Length: 493
Image 1 (cartoon, rainbow, N blue to C red):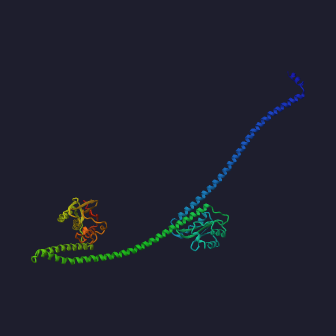
Image 2 (cartoon, rainbow, N blue to C red):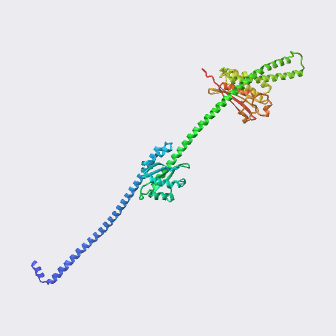
Image 3 (cartoon, helix red, strand yellow):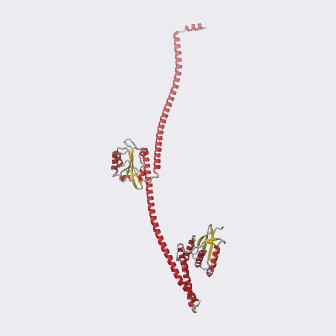
């Protein structure tokens, strides 16, 4: 079979064989080239994708680097601000209790200037431009500053920070060969104490906005410290002045008090002397008028007896005034012996009411009294009896016919409040404060017709005062008056 094939092939034209082989090779190469072209296309696509990926990665890397740089700058800015805030805190901590201007300015030192981010600092007295603090400025530079500011100080009175656009700033910057500097007045209220200046020594250095803000904060804090110092000094001087004036006033009051005591003693002595002097002739007049009324010296006409009875009544009134004046005088001079002892208040009120019953009935008044039985109070019985008699007599005088008088005693803890009320004419508010003054009488047409010396209430107040107790009055004009006074309760057991 193989022989047959070889014979057949050998019978074909060799050229044909070559063509067939060549064609076969071309076909095979075409298939191979197609496959390679497909592989190259796939590789090209992958290469484009890889190139895009590399570009994206490069862009992301750039963004990461940029973000990292911004983050570093932001972090540096935060750290710088934190450092500045720490600086302000330390300055406040070290100076918050300083109450002396010169000591306050010692807080501006080289460390503060450096921590602020500057190389130079200068604090000049506003009045004479002499340096208070100097960090880094040379003598010739200070002279330049003084010469420029000498005639331009008023510029600083109207600003918080010297403007870079001002002529003064440009001259300082140019003559000192400094690109940026900060100048601010340090003042309290309207008065400027000093000029504060900071700078960096070269033309290339620039002061940042944040540095300017921190500098202004420091200056404002120093201004506030100066305000506090000035306020303290004003208060201190005011205190000294107030103490001096109080001392002077106290001395004047002591002198006035001594003068009053002298006058009061002279008045008491005079009243006592005059009262004693009046008592003898009044007693004599009283005695003779009584004898004449009783016809001891012969029969008198009815008209003469009426006149003598009027004389007798007026002598009794004069005797009562003299006795009251003597009582007041003795109490004021301390000659009255006050015997404090327990006494049943209900029994005392009942006895006084019984004693005054004729006057009450004569004026057709209703008398009510209410006091707890068995309640004992500390008092001088005779003096408190006098108080009750005077207060009830007062109520009888100034209460119209058909009115009512009420006497009460109410316990309030360790004290009792005794009150005498009436439904009389009442007292105006302006008269209440003067009611206990000697010889004072209320200026009221209804009450002026009632006779009186104006001494009864004054005596009542003095008696209550000798017991170290309180007395007061409440009244409504036209509706009545109530007098109150207190006494200590005797504790059981």
